[in-house]
Image (cartoon, rainbow, N blue to C red):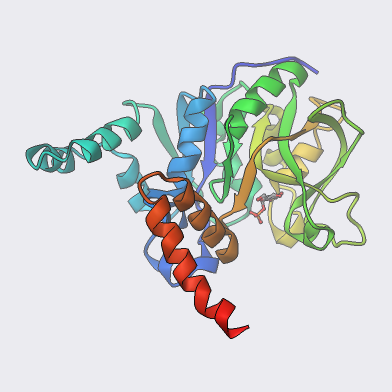
Length: 298
Ligand code: G1P
């Protein structure tokens, strides 16, 4: 197992159809759905930047061109804001502006699974360890999750996946780890299985959408092995590296919101709004006024 710490590229698989949010996602990529006023993808990008990522690789698909516009500089919009003296908004656009040449796109031509999506970016990834961020999983906390993982990866090298315990009845929605008892937040992984049935799951320790991967995983993905749900699974390719480049799970510190589900997305919206100094008081009053009639009816 080699120790590696320099992780400068991140892959963002954003080709999914977002069917759980139809009809909204009929024309709006789900990654552009906002939590308050920032799209989901923005949280993922900021987490990556905080972790030292310099190259941002988006795996897109047909119907996702609004994402490319979002990530682009918008000179006309900036000029309009400038003329209108909207300095705060202008500053926000400048803050999120991506450096020239930092963004690259690969296209997933067929919906063949997460593993296939990552593999579609192989020529852009090259030969160094790289991060994968699933924007559906929004993780809040004082130290961004990927930053914690980059530090942990400096210790363990190989492949590192973010992990958290989930309710036993939910294991069928995740990649599940069979991990050795760990020291601190890191545990060596001896097995992993994508979306097991609750009776065949080795534990309830689930993979959450943050990975630091050895490029050997791309060679595993090249085998195009079909896994759970008839798709090429990233979990299977990482599992094939157990005993080779090695796999660890990392129990991150932070609150994860599953923004791929409606309830998780709404929960994140409320939590993020309550964190915002400019909204907190008004929003709290709103919530209280919505909650009141229900209390009265009980
Ligand atoms: C994907 C991965 C799964 C992981 C999950 C985390 O599943 O395949 O291993 O546990 O993300 O959110 P999906 O949610 O795309 O079905």
